[in-house]
Amino acid sequence: MIAEAIKQAQKMHRTVIEQTYDGTCTIYSLQDVKDPETKITEQKEVTLLGDVPCHLSFSGAVTADGTGTSTDVKQEIKLFLAPEVPVPPGSRIEVTQRGTTESYSKSGKPAVYSSHKEILLELWKEYA
Image: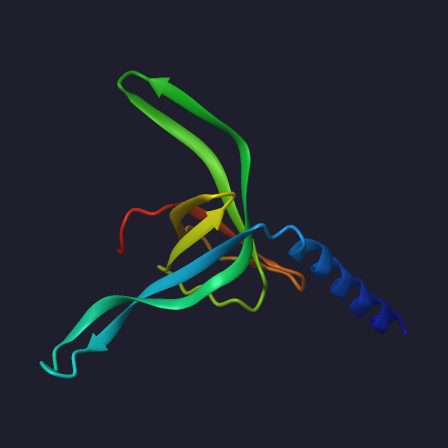
């Protein structure tokens, strides 16, 4: 009886979290692709998943700590999405939210909960 109540509460929690998803993301990864004509295998960017509902969150204000000639801008960027969505290490994640599209990379191991997954992101630079 208690286990069923916990499952129901988790389901309700997931529903509420998913109502905050106001963006979509596309997940890309480098994969070996063999050209059928030349038989040469090259690494190419491949779309793994597209139009995945998500929410991008920015915590803390953007602050610039200037010391001498360099300036560091620090901000935490977190992506919320369904827990079953696979995001392999090294992926490029393109997020569109509120009319803005930006590419990011996964910067750490995701925190996976029964209701959602949280992934810390960095602005995209390039594939490693």
